[in-house]
Amino acid sequence: MKNNILVLGGKGKTGRRIVERLTKKGHNVRIGSRVENPAFDWNKPAGWPAVLENIESVYITYQPDLAVPGAKEAIEALTKVAKEQGVKKLVLLSGKGEVEAERCEKLVMNCGLDYTIIRASWFNQNFSESFFLDPILAGHVALPQAEVKVPYIDANDIADVAVEALLNEQHNGEIYELTGSRFLTFKEVVHEIAEATGRDIQFTAISLPEYNKMMEEHGIPTDYIWLINYLFTEVLGNDDNQVITHGIEQVLGRKPKDFSDYVRETAATGIWNQTVDA
Image (cartoon, rainbow, N blue to C red; front, top):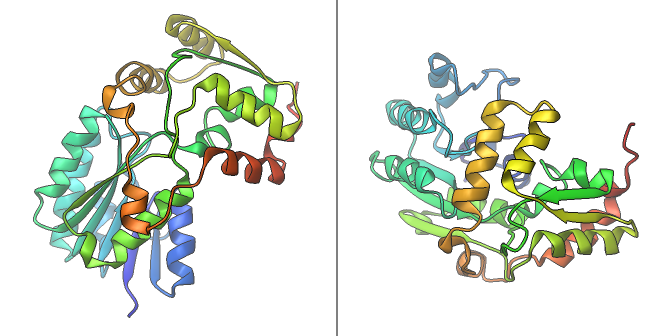
């Protein structure tokens, strides 16, 4: 049976992978994005009813993060419009160990629709498709919280879980916590990438104030700097994130992709061997 599914952030790290999987399975997929028609824009709720029309299930990912000011209000408004438009199920991508994200989760859980919550640890793809890529290309990664260990999760594993949740009622009402199967520090991550690419990539431990100054000097927007500070102080060292969970095994019946496998596959694409413009 074909389902009509809306994937918000359908061109993002998890969203585009979910779109690919659902399309391959023959479902009708609508991408929620500002460049689509009808367009979805978190800042323009007047356009939401058109995007949600005839949609049965919605995958929700909020940019840049559920922790930012305004996210709670946006999620609450979206759940109301979804209900009005006859949507049956919501699948929310949330952050593991984020108090603000859990407030958004509760709005989804209490809105009267079927739901699945996916709480994910930091993504492997942060090093190849996001904010850590540029310093890796430059050959020098300087980050705070150098000793904190993270059980990185692969975006492909998140996508597989999300597809299962969108298509199967047995996941209704569930909260799945997704992590990788081992912990890595930033230094260990950089070392693995350097080994796989044959490049000399240095890692330097710095303080958070030093990191803030560096971001300011590079013209990073203030709201983005706020988010990075939040993630490094409230989330990265959070006790909830110092735990390896088994959500992948629970939903998919297999182990999560190991970070080394991600590194090997990503290195083969050449993404980490690009030339950086001077």
